[in-house]
Image (cartoon, rainbow, N blue to C red; front, side, top):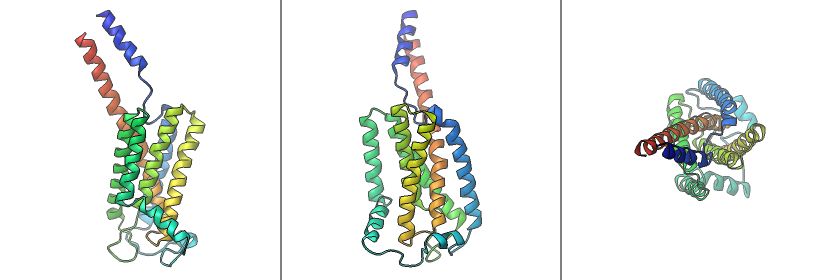
Length: 238
């Protein structure tokens, strides 16, 4: 029995650190998520049932006008495609494949779960807030495209932090920078194409900042519990 317990302990020790939410970032991303949740709620209350640009929206870019022409319109359309079903599916498939090639199955699961939950939460918020653009049937807050791309960028950034063992400061910069770039690029495209208000994009960005760390903790919790159960089974079987 002692030998088997020792073998089991060695197996546990040999397992790579595969947590999708690096421990060094848990506290800080929790704080960021709390602030982001307040922003999502605040903007949702401010624009509930609205159907016009706010002061910030008009200052950034008027989404009711033909804001851009070639060649930037083509860039915006290509970016927007990444948030459409076909483009989004391709990006998720590529992310999952990359995680599996790096032998990070937990990260592959997180890529699917985090994006699905983030987009789902965004859908619920659209109906709850009821903000519209270009007609009563076009719910706009928060931007689903921005939520999607930001969530995927966060998932991949967390993978990078864990893969290279980055410290708290550098890891936080990597994660927040990735989310900001993804959110800004997709947000610009959506506003430029007159599909969303600027504050919709901010709401989508913040929605992803709330959901992704939470789903990462959930995936880690379930995976760790499964590992402990498997280890206990090995010890009992021995």
